[in-house]
Length: 158
Image (cartoon, rainbow, N blue to C red; front, side, top):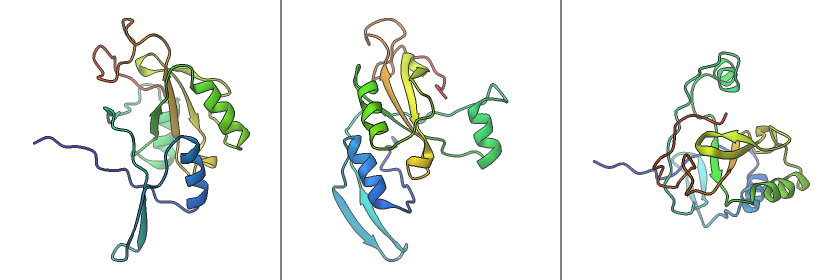
């Protein structure tokens, strides 16, 4: 039986702040629904239909950032990751910085699948670590990330 991702639920304290952030990332709320039985109001931001993966982050360096995350918070969801087109990461980072968002790194770094990556710091993203990534080279070159994951190697950029 095939399984598909339906949604990712994010508990929020400041909805307007997250609406602003996701709006800057090109995502807007298209549906809102009260669910009194659960004591919440849900707000849905549809994602473009693209192949996606669940990335399991196995620690190989006990002093690395993921090891620190597990030590502090325990295992679980570490980050959300969004891909931008080649050449869009640096301008998007500039826009977000101008709006007051902090990044983990001053400049993008190398990540898995030959991607350039950076993370919006959770302190300015509603407690979520949000990864932004862009292809570092032409997707037809060997080892480059392709949306169908063919030819991709595993490993985390974090």
